[in-house]
Image 1 (spheres, rainbow, N blue to C red):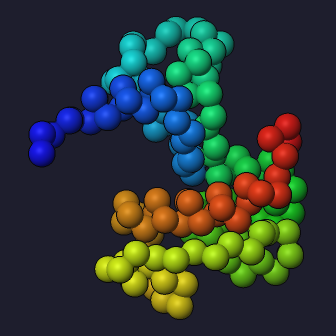
Image 2: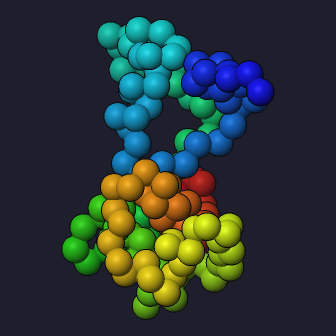
Length: 144
């Protein structure tokens, strides 16, 4: 199998206007834009327009948690691990019930042992970002 390289994969994501989900991902998009699209414009409004032309749907779980109805659930802060714990416990009743099935070999990410902190491991952070998004997406309004 021939290796595509990340630039080619990234170009396919742009071409097909894929949705992106991240947590506190503004700097990630600054990096991606400046390394794979073009030099960052000096004007912020132009950057924002160009970014959303390239990525029409960006979902930032930190923004969702802080700026929608879920903000009342954040008593301490909005870092990824805390957002995950709040969504998992669902003491407020605001979060959707989501059934997550893990692939074989990823048992370490199962909810029974997620209290064992694996934060900042890339795969784990991606998993819990997706988990927070899945628990919030069906119930928040995009206009929020």
